[in-house]
Every structure is written in structure tokens, then in C-alpha cells.
Length: 196
Image 1 (cartoon, helix red, strand yellow):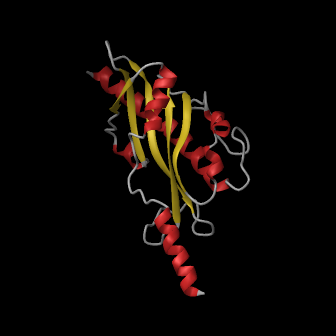
Image 2 (cartoon, helix red, strand yellow; image 1 turned 90 degrees about the horizontal axis):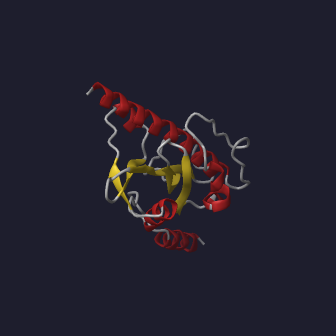
């Protein structure tokens, strides 16, 4: 019986592709940018000079520019990873520990307009065993129009999902945090430009 269980675990781990890093060029990102803006956009890494900002990132911010002719800003993009817990394996407040293998994850992106309001949230790589329902477009539409100063809370502004509690809280908290962080980064950038 132990050998059957061990074989099942080994086969299962082979079927789930391990991905150490986030795919910042996932095809769904480019398609979403083109669909929302009606044109090709160019993504420029949005530098976060403040050390405080980089502490909160499990991903990267980008500025979306019109490719031609004036390279005007179309908005912003965040691509990141949210860690969730394996069933019974960790608490939401604990940090991921590869050795203990208690965390799973999913990768997603947020498209913001120039005023930092959310235009789209999409999950593009779900590597967890439970909670995949948060990837449904109908559920993710709840984030559209959210601005950084508005509070997001599961069970109030965002519908809870039975069986996806950890994932729902994880993405909701991350969207709230990244919206505020983008606003702070842009304010910091404006202040630096004003000093020049």
C-alpha cells in the first residue's frame, strides 16, 4: 500500500509543472492589453526606487505605453504571484517555505488605467489544488473600477466563494495592496519630477 501511495505522489508531482519564476510575458497579458486599449502597447518596467515598495512585491509593475507615435501612457500593469496554503498545511500569515512544501501559488495580473483604477484582473497560472474558482471571469469582474482608496473585503465588496476561501482572501488582499502600492509609487515619482 505504501508503494502505491508513493508512486501516486511521484506521478502527481510530475503532472503538475513546477514553475519557479513568474512568466511576465504570458500571452494572455498581451491579448488583454490589446483588447482593452484597441492597440499594441509596450510594457516598460516601472522602477521602484523606494526600498519600502520592493518589500511588498511578489511580482513587477509596468507602465503601458502606446507603441507609436508619441509613446503616451495607457496605464499600468502588475504581474505577480499570490501564495496560498495547501489544505491544512499553513496559515495565511506564514511565509512560503519551499522546504516544508506547505504553500501553493497562482500567478495573475492587474491592468490599471492612468488614474490607478482597475480595468481587468486575470489569473493565468493556477498551481494550487483548491480554490481555482477565483479564476472565473465573472468573479474577477468584481474588481473592475476599484480605486486604491476604496476598501476591498471578502464578504462585503467581494463575494466569498465556498471552497476557495484562502484563494479569495489571498487575491483580494493582494489586489488591495498592489493598488495602494502603485498609487504610492506614482506619487513618489511625481514628487521626484516636481523637484527637478
